[in-house]
Image (cartoon, rainbow, N blue to C red; front, top):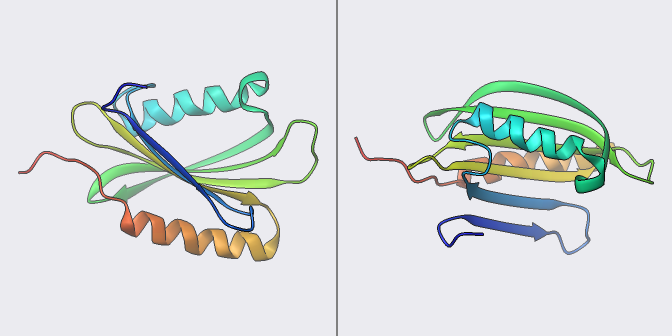
Length: 132
């Protein structure tokens, strides 16, 4: 990964939640291109270990910019436990796109906490944008 690209993942101490943020140009410079590229990778079960993806997308705003919010229902290959992943994609400076995600098992208590974690992470997400 080039030094100008960033990826960091945090797993909750109990192992129930993964929170990740990435800044790169892997799939393009717009939220739509980046999410399409990421979803194509997720759909390759041999690469991602994800199966039976059901995807819902919403346009949204992040840091005052157009963004794409993606909800993914899936399960890991060879496991039947349903999972939920929430992601937001927003363009930064110089062709970079930020991807923020929170992933957990799809049980009622986990989903409620996931919604709170995702909202807090979105409020805290800082992106590099050109000053106007």
